[in-house]
Image (cartoon, one colour):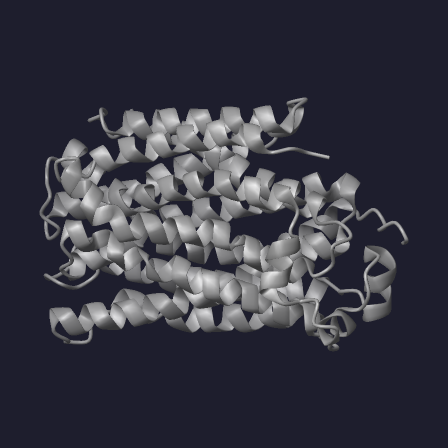
Length: 436
């Protein structure tokens, strides 16, 4: 097996640059979905149910994209066709989703339309997101893999930062931040429009700059037979792949369960927490609630900044497991403290800590898993299946969110404490991971 060549900084950068645009779309979705559906008329106890669709589509779509791209060899590449198609669909849906309340439909019809749009948006984002992880697994050698995922993490956080602040900035520019009952404010609608434009431009850049290896080159560098031949042998069956997966795959998956369980509640309940604690309102039609919605974007941007600051610190730890566990502990402290802070600016501190956990979640799992998968083949299929460790905990958290909210007194800020406990459990689970 030939050693994969070292790539220049710009070679590594180009592999992941389109991720910047994809992450803007993902940030707009994660920061505004609860706000959009609450504005349309959703009850807080049912709010988490709207979050079931995104991870559900992810767990269906990403293994399919991974497996199909393992078998795809064409002049446009192996992973890139799926990246481009996913981005194109995402752009279309981003122009429809925030307008769910603007077409004169009844509340129930508007929410159904929004759900369908959300389903297609998350499907397309997942379709566009997965190829970037696969490109690094395919084309980057072991010495540069940590650097490649760090660049991807930086671009991910930079894209998040831009997407999160859009509604706040547009409101500052004078674009309406309130709207009639059941209608999403223009500040949110325009944010989705601009995000869609940036997404497609970034993906076009990656498509133009990245040339994937042909089947013979891939075989030479990865030490496995061409993907098409592997599939013809039937070795790509998902159940077989899971049965033969290295133990690291499952142990990292356990940590992932607690991490993504926690972050699901951040996305779902931060808006209600900030509105109640800092603006003293739960009325979704009020100016205060919509101002809190914009401030949530700022807090999520602070989280992204915390992640950017923490990401270069992670490689300085001599033990990656310690770095992973410490990061999650800091994030858990951040989540739990959100419930007790009533000053909008003091909330910057816990969200900086949450950013430490986010940085580790973006880089560490894929470093552990892709290293453990060397020589197994079917990298795309395995990473698609590994995405289940991201999606399943979100589905579980969303399904039981309403019940947990009732158990903690129907106070949305208490769900942030639940999220903190989940991250503490994730930190403890890191000890189970065994590196080569």
